Image 1 (cartoon, rainbow, N blue to C red):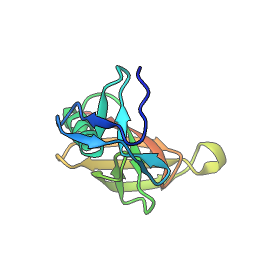
Image 2 (image 1 turned 90 degrees about the vertical axis):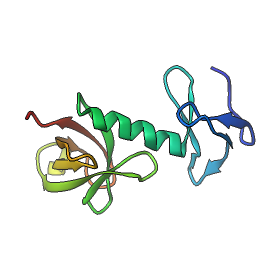
Image 3 (image 1 turned 60 degrees about the vertical axis):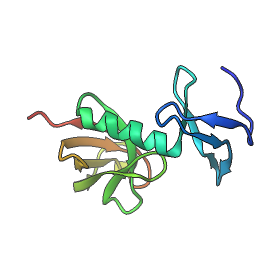
Image 4 (image 1 turned 90 degrees about the horizontal axis):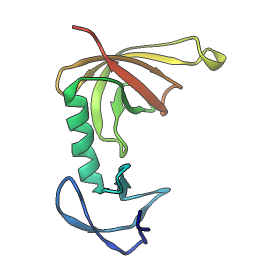
Length: 125
């Protein structure tokens, strides 16, 4: 996999648009998949929305800091938390959620808490 340097011109695999590799806070404005493909922030949002729309298998995202939504890599809203409770897990703070995604699909999941990664699975319909 070829190294990426800040200032390099990159092409997003999802959108086909070019952009300049840059640092944004403590992260970057690009991501790579396991095959080395590069995605812009917009490309990542499109890819995440395509994955959640399939409504199949486990989906990893983030529980927002206020616990009201689930988001993607850059805070893009992917769903609304309908129910949240805490219990079990390390220190009794494991978050358990029920979520409606942006397409109306229903999910359940658990994770470390607000502002942290959470794994969702589709509710059986």
